[in-house]
Image 1 (spheres, rainbow, N blue to C red):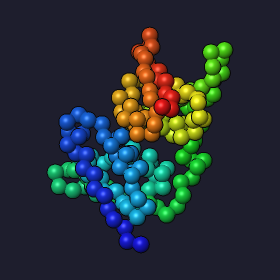
Image 2: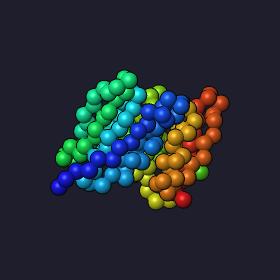
Image 3: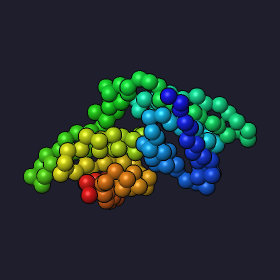
Length: 172
C-alpha cells in the first residue's frame, strides 16, 4: 500500500499566539490508514511526540530553514499499548457518587499543556452514556470546546474561588 502525506502548517498559528493542538489532533483523527501527517512548526514539538506515540505514531523530525521544524508522523505498525496510553488517565480520573448524582472527575491540575486537554479527551472516550465528566484544570480550557463539539459533547466552565476551573461535560 502506498502512503500519502497530509501536510499541516501551524507556524503562523503559533506565531500569532494561537495554540494549534486541537487543530493537530483533528488532523490526526481524520487521517486514513494509508495517510501520514507532515507537520510544519516553528519549533520541535517534543510534547506532541509522546501524545501521538500513544496513538500508534512514530515520528521523524528535522530542522528546516529559518529554524522551523518538519515532523513526519507515520503509523508505527504497532497497536498503541492500552496500559501505557491510559496510565495518566487512570491516575487522574475517579468516579464520584453523591446524593446529587454520579459523575467522572478528572483532575488535570498541575499538568503542562497539552496534557490537560489530552487527559480530558482520553477520559471522555470511556464516559458511560448519560454520565457527566467534571474536569478540574488550572486554566480555562479554551481549546477543549472545539474538541468537545467535534465529538458530540457540550461543556460549561465555571471559575472556582481558588482560581482553578471546573468544566462539566455531557453528551449532546
